[in-house]
Amino acid sequence: MSSLCRSQFRLTVVGPWRLHRLLCQLDARLIGVVLRQWLITPWRFLTEGELSPPKAFRIVRRRTLAILDALRTAGDGLAEILADMSGDFLRYALKSSRKESPSTFALLAQLEVQVAWLDA
Image 1 (tube, helix red, strand yellow):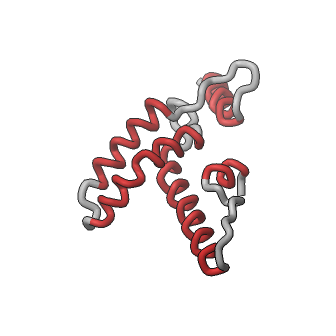
Image 2 (image 1 turned 180 degrees about the vertical axis):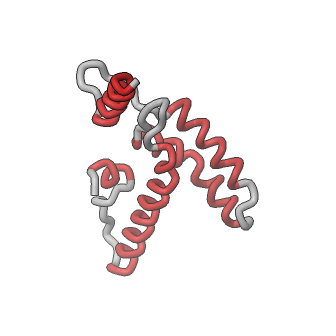
Image 3 (image 1 turned 90 degrees about the vertical axis):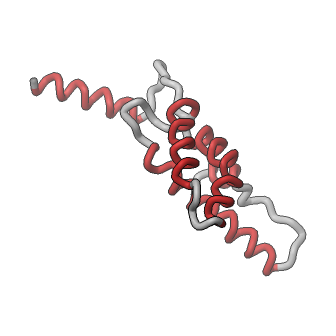
């Protein structure tokens, strides 16, 4: 598990609780990790760029209560919330382009463009 998940979901923080509560806390946090990954995966690699997991996490965290409310009401309004999150991901959660040290995704995207140009 990445250090990003450990820090964002506070997986290493343990309170002075009994074993059953510790396990419940751990289960809830791990469910949060899975749900966050499920929510951001469709937008992880886009033609516009690569999604930044920490930036996406902040957007998901801000919408968590709205998502829970929608799930409590049999999914009413969930599609709108997810559509709003999609727009927020594209607007606020893309990685900044790095000239000095581009990400692997950026290098692969450049390679694909060069290969397509050579084939033409």
